[in-house]
Length: 270
Length: 231
Image (cartoon, rainbow over all chains, first blue to last red; front, top):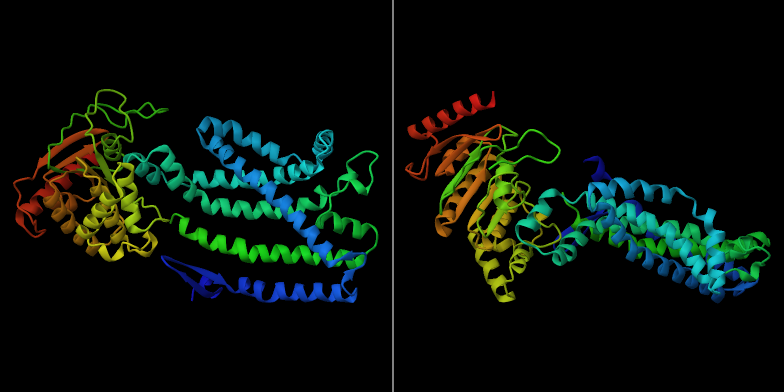
């Protein structure tokens, strides 16, 4: 038995392709999510329908708002990442100039200019925009660099075949380029969301970056809920919020990312 | 005609004067880096000449060493995509795909994806795809280099059968002198960007047997010249 096959627990079969499901992925869905749900239930029921000063509905409402912010930020990042990656990949010259430029931009800590972003959005009375923007910037680089990697790895013969057979630009984009980078888009998205969850905790707690403001200027969400609970010593709320967040991440991972990662295998060049 | 790649002083091809005739099976042989691939890329329109003129046929298609199949498409979709690029209607695409998959013995594999096929089957898909667009010239870039001997021999027979049926002009690159003598009407020996010598084999009857005296003599002659050219 080879090293890799030892870890493969089961093979899922789909029409036209198959993919391995590893043991840890099964454990993940069968053990981690139920365990966390039991944990959350225990915390909730100890407060008889509420956790500290927050109801279960508020907890889920906070999660929903946070997920909406992440989704909007991801949508913008997704739309912008492909043109940027294509721009970098356009020629050796653009790559030579743009890649280090974007690399530097990526290295600049987003939080360093977060106050400026907030001041900008406050002008338009649109604080949601500040939170979404900061998450979007973080997500963007993961997607861009993943896509650049994917574009580089399109085999020369595939490009030549498209050229020889006269596949036009639109068809090439739709039927060759997008499928070619799809696996990298999925891994980039996975990393982007991980970065997004991380950034959410800061993005929703705006008052720390707004001079003379109070916690009332914060955005209601799972991130701000955790920060407020921690700072006010509401350990029940804090634990419930953190478990809720982990369950959401685990469920997304199992129902979206794992499935997409497996599906993307059929798009990989050998 | 000559070809020099940007950023290099040394021409990849120099003083090339070469004509292919309709329905002819030509095989290019020569040491690595002698310009065989550059020559077929020029014919296929993947490269442009630096000097002189290449009179390209209007419709050239190509079979790649790697197969260059789209892994996310099924076998039939891999053929249909190039027909769609040529503006064929859905009915034409279906009809031609069925025809060429049948011709290459892949009818039972139409719904499979390339990774589910063997190396030989993948190359058959590449051949079916290339033939489907009714090319004036079919270019093959070392299509059997990565295959085992038995599969290669089988594909040689199939390729010759298809060639007889379609009467297409074939320009193929090979690293094997035996393969060249088995298949070609004309073998073109290249070295250092030049055409060194051409061997007319059209009068040699097919199927050619490797044990036949003439076959052995031709292989030995080309191999001897190839060794000199490689020095």
